[in-house]
Amino acid sequence: MTSRPVETLAQRKRQLVADELTQAALGLLARGGFDAVTVDEIAAAAGVSKRTFFRYFASKEDVVVQFLTGLGAAMREELASRPASEPPSTALRHTVWRSIDACAGQTERTLRVVQLILDTPALLARFLERQAQWREELAAVVAERLGLDPATELYPRLAAGMALTAFHTVLQQWSESDGTGDPAALTDGCFAVIAPALDAVAGE
Picture 1: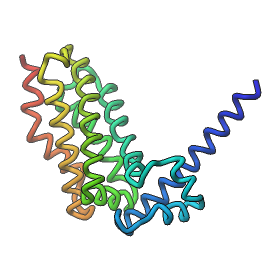
Picture 2 (picture 1 turned 90 degrees about the vertical axis):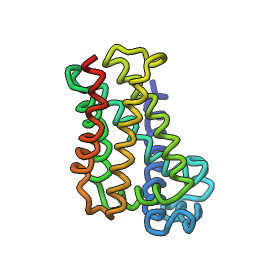
Picture 3 (picture 1 turned 45 degrees about the vertical axis):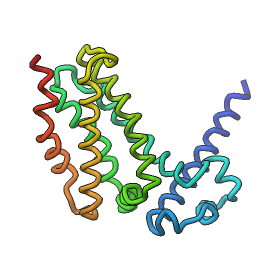
Picture 4 (picture 1 turned 30 degrees about the vertical axis):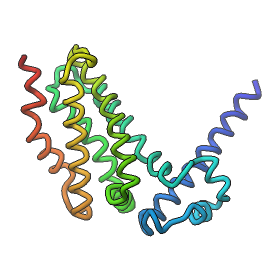
């Protein structure tokens, strides 16, 4: 009976340290650039040792990847919750918008982190790697919504891929505008282009 609270407190403490490291790392990396900031500096900013940093993250890249993890989960959750009667383009537009809004609707630092990811080859590679994983997860949800077999039908992966291309394009445009572009308008613009292809399956 006493082990459960101790475990919960330990988990909460671990999460607090991880959050502190993430916040410190993203702030420093966004201001100083990926190559210029050291693990020692991140650890010092979080008030922990370098050894502690490596208990939580294997590298600086992993801190940023952790930041990205929630975006894919949010998109999958949003798509699964959309009404079954919605056209694919509408459901996928809402799906992408959830994560775009999460990025654009936060602080100035979030913009800098997005710019850092898109401008740093090592981070961009990890971002694209994550998007490939998200495509498979979204494709599975698309297939389930439409009663398609993702192993044999082309549409689910193509639809998920188009949605993620729109997601990436909006982030690029928003980043290049230094945050002055309207993410909602950019998202709507992207889906206006791809909606006919996304919804073609509904008419079959």
